[in-house]
Amino acid sequence: MKLLDSSVIIGILRGDEKLRKVARELSREEITTTVLTYFELFSRIYHRGLAGEEKILRKLLKLMNILELDETSADKAAEIMGRLLKAGKPVNIVDVLISGIAIVNGVEEIITKDADFKIIEEIYGHPKIRIL
Image (cartoon, rainbow, N blue to C red; front, side, top):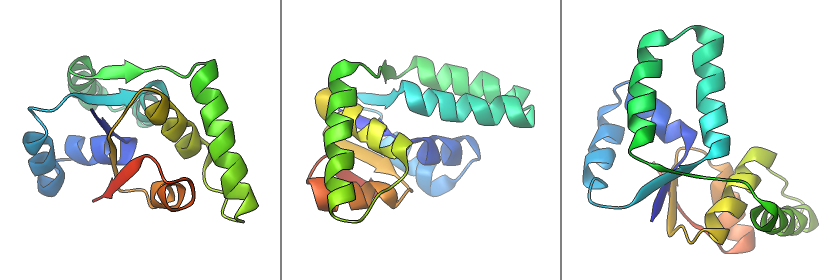
């Protein structure tokens, strides 16, 4: 199972050909995202009044499993953040929560444009990150 981060989904919506190619390559994979990414995406939609993009986004998200934040994934995220803080490399809390959700749900790889995830992989060892 592969997880798309908001940076990749936004790029696909904006027509970034490199990201659309990646999406086509992943069409046979189980693709997922998180409720936190859902929040990030729709905050942007509502803030900017992107009604046309909203329709496309809703269709795209219907093709994905939306992973939830629960106690187990929150605990895993807290463990990750603890290691990051001990290493002196704290990152965006939302990215840490997404990583916790991904690990608990057996995500093989997070696909993103956000370098914070690479720091998480370097310090914690999981999940595998593909930076585009």
